[in-house]
Figure 1 (cartoon, rainbow, N blue to C red):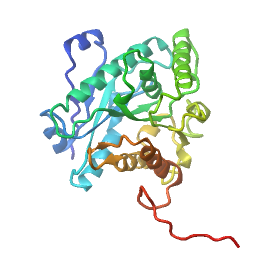
Figure 2 (cartoon, rainbow, N blue to C red):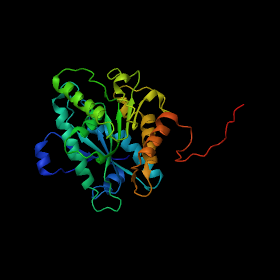
Figure 3 (tube, rainbow, N blue to C red):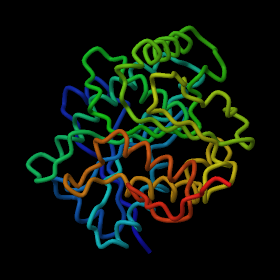
Figure 4 (cartoon, helix red, strand yellow):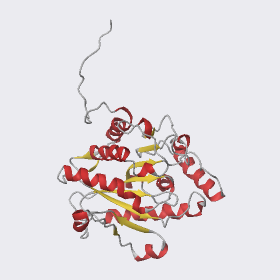
Length: 304
């Protein structure tokens, strides 16, 4: 039996004092967890953000699948999954903590990247997976005054209500939504962050699919929105929580992540076209074969 050992990452004292309720963890199990007791790390960083009342332990499903996939290729590449403990705050019911969570995530990204210092293939950015309100917090990072957009190389949101709050119960939450969405619409030309939003479909009674679609602007082509029941090799609808551990969906996500690795940098590619074409391949079209950057034409169809 593999033993789960999530390692708590020591945060700078000032940061721990400013956010006493929040923590950062590195997911691990078995021998992988033993090896990663010693820093610096050598993999590709991915940060998981839980949603309303969500647990940092929800990273286990995707983290475990990524580890199995890395084992299959003898750790030629591997992902390090980090997870933020937001103390299971009810941010969908009270929006007062959303800004605080966003600022904490910014500090976490900087802390994570320092864990790779001195490595030959040290990352300069992280990929983020956000469940529910965690996805909105990730989008809100771009609204912070001192945030550098190139700290994130990819954003995947799962059952995140991007359009509007499910229940606008206070001004904090409605103001937060307005700030985030206005920023993304007004700065669409400057935002080059590849973003994928996955909805749960008809089984998700908490967040209907219509709320999960990213603002589709003619000049913002790096955003994709899909429903899990239409994702190739997944084909199932998930409820609001099970989207985090739906094996078919997590397998699709991890296959895409491994196809996004640049062989030269051993990190996620910085090429936006490649990112979009990999996500298109796995989440939209999938012609039942491995991803190819320049697929060969099998046959030419001539007009009759």
